[in-house]
Length: 443
Image (cartoon, rainbow, N blue to C red; front, top):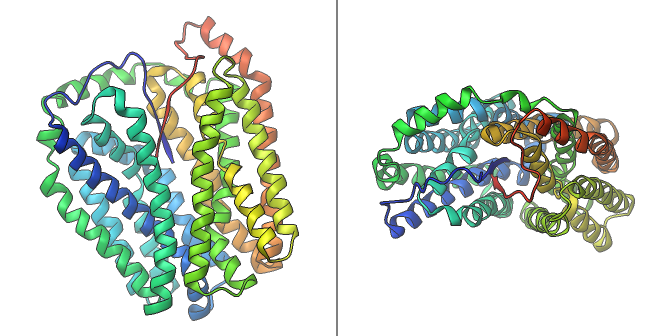
């Protein structure tokens, strides 16, 4: 996931001259494509057991099919977002959707593991910049005071897409076979990809703003990019956030397979239960972020302590869960553990905003996205799959929560230098925001 920070100095209302009805149509189509994005990404998890059986794949190979998408998203988010700003966001969004939908259809046609890997690679390329460019389009057509609400709703689209991808993918696979699971997601994306540029027009959502945007981009290059990596605490925040997402991302990817193997569930039921666990994770992300803002309004540094608490709490709950045998008690503990596993997302975003210059917050949150994907969402499923090949998935799941201890240690390191780094940046005349920060999360 990527992040967007609404800075106080950005007071241009880009929605002037755009009819509210048309703005909501733009939102609906862009939101629909975000759901398609995550449906195409997460449907794979629901059919892991079927692919493993049909192609005699190892868990390491399955994990790589999931991790390659996150890797491409991490590597390409920044360059593709910049290209979209240059060549037109609407055209770029339509091309992205077309690519990931065709690639998902390629998954349905794959005849072996190599074909599937290439198709998943292309899914990652297509989805790489959708979150950042999509939210940029959405917030440009609404008044400034609605941005936080819209961004929160946009973030929820990623959660809904993940749930639908796993639940519907499992149900379709049980009735029609795994190929139709991919085909169904692809057809939905292709329909929206065709409709999007017909209805959403660059000229209607960005009248007379291209020149101003270009001049702002030129000026931004001259601003203090060095704050992205100028303090130990901000670097530790990038690392800690990525390590914690190793845990949550891994559990989400492998849960349908775990339910299939240890609960003897079919693809449809396993996908449905796994979707509920994904919902717990998404709801926890929002609730933990709200709790952080409420508790830290007068003392922003408490966010670091809360991040540590979320790490250790999820480690305890998930470790207890995977120490238990299969049953209702285990599932309840997994849901509770996942409720706080992604809770570090809000505090980490706030820390990055506090520790970097306001003018480079977009790049700072893209850097955080890179760390989240390259340290957590990409390697987590692959490494867990390789370990599972040696000791089994249940034993591998017992090890996964321990990564949260490492994440907590890194956040503790950040806490040790947080005040000192804030003071140093202020002393150097860098405009940092140490008050309450509004973080808009882009899926």
